Image (cartoon, rainbow, N blue to C red; front, side):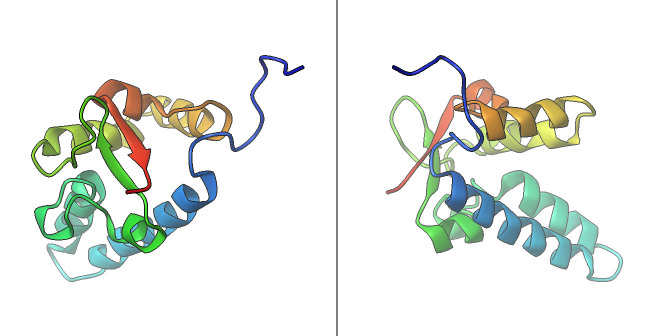
Length: 124
């Protein structure tokens, strides 16, 4: 009999998502190292990484692990709706909500950014 209590790491594709996030943050950080405007490239990559047309709606980290963020209703990529990619990521820049987001990722089934942007992570 299962209790209603969640355990650490119960989100979908937990390990793959963690490793993909580490790679994507490393890429975003690497882009910020370019002189003068590198921070712009790093910020744009971090905020829109799941909706970039040249990557077919997968960030580089997600592509390596074979997962993708799609729209909840029809499972299409975020290339046509980059605003959903922005909503998913902008929460990490809001004080206190970023801590709630990390907690939800580790202990609940879905991130708040996924709920607000009506997206989910799948293995295509």
